[in-house]
Length: 140
Figure 1 (tube, rainbow, N blue to C red):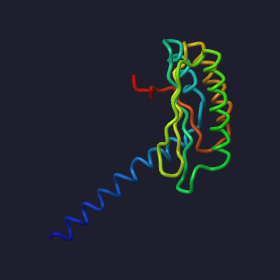
Figure 2: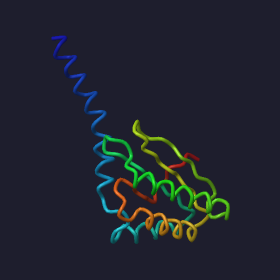
Figure 3: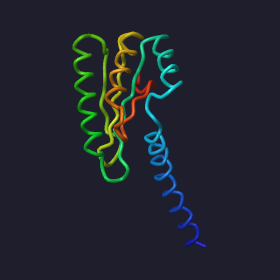
Figure 4: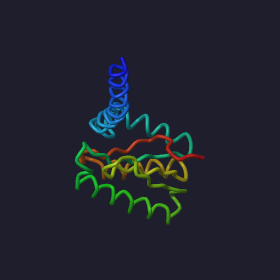
């Protein structure tokens, strides 16, 4: 009886690890900035100061070089925007064991958010495992 209980716990632990990674992988496979997603993001950015999340992900072998390069470009863009006053604050956080990273950005206003979103999505174009999303990610 104890063996079956331990096996069930091991299976649950595996599921708790695999499920979040699967969700991240599915998010990475979705096309960044296509069709109505851009319109929805633009509308949301117009309503108020916006938060933008930039993700550099991996598929189990570390963050690929092209993705790391895109992250470096995004970081440089955001640092410049912060110096110009277009970004109120941004924070970088490791979110995985293999170098996965999230940049959270709070834009000054809707216009700054739209401009940043457009530039970040241009960086993200054709780069696997590099995603840009208009979503809250900074704790107030």
